[in-house]
Amino acid sequence: TECFVFCRHCNRKRRWKERMKINPPETIEAMLRYIADRPKVREVIISGGDPLTLKDNFLDWFLGRLRMIHHVEVIRLGSRAPVVAPMRITKRLTGILKKYRPLWFNTQFNHPREITEAAKEACDRIISAGIPLSNQSVLLKGINDDYEVMKELLYGLQRMGVRPYYLFHCDAVAGTGHFWVDIEKGITMMEALRRDISGLCLPRYVLDSPSPLGKIPLCVP
Image 1: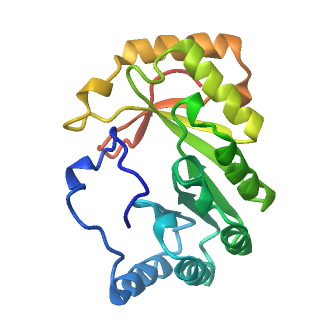
Image 2: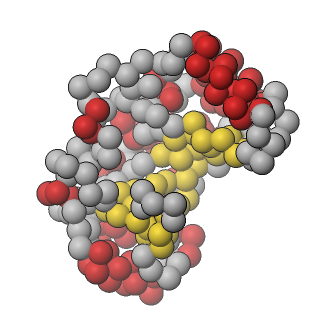
């Protein structure tokens, strides 16, 4: 899928020139068969791109097909729509998502200024539909690598009922070097936050490794 915006820190920015299209029906059917044939698959993550750039009717159909696979217990959806396209979070959309609970929604606020009134309303619609909403920030030099800025962001998320879930160390992708923060600085900031704010406000600071290790914790939770 495509995205609503091109995030300057995107770990897929090398593919921005590609015109991303939805997979053809036969590919989608093959994906669903792959999941159905693997009973150990308990959770499915729908990401992209941004899945909410797709039409409501397709999302309804696709989520319905996933729900027909009995061993898929949880669906996770990742989208920046609440932040950058809050008008996309309509009553019709949240009504569709509500049908397929348990469904978890992960978004990405990176700075307190992104917590606009429109974003608050979008988050409230999601939460009011009984869908847990979590945030996955990226640590960005000159944006949120400051104790006070990060604290304001975390408090703002908590006030909206959004759980601060992860703080990702910025990936070492070409074209993002101006956003890179020293890991030591990130750890120092997180340790200071851990002393001063409640556990409900504190995300896990991790490095998303391309190795089989996956998400590597960078400090004690």
